[in-house]
Image (cartoon, rainbow, N blue to C red; front, side, top):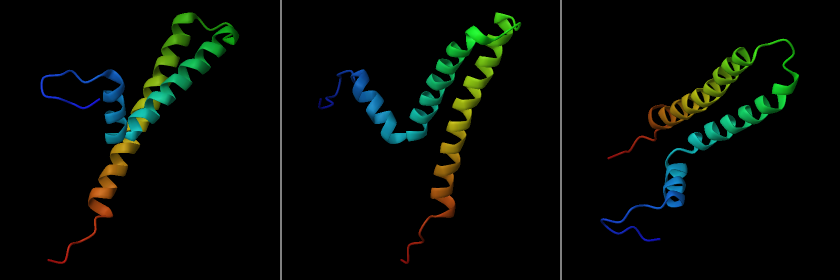
Length: 90
């Protein structure tokens, strides 16, 4: 779809644009889905742990995964911009 002024961007196009701009966001979302999937699987075998404690630990793991991926993305973009920047000979 061609973007015209005044028209809303479709959600698929918006996600594709965001993925091109920030690929680590997709890695963070994939990590979030993986942590939630593993948590749902392990919920049955949590033993004597209460549900609220299990869910709090799952939330911390999910948030840590997303924040870690976004931090790696930020470090990568900063390294590309400041450390690996080629100097122009003008």
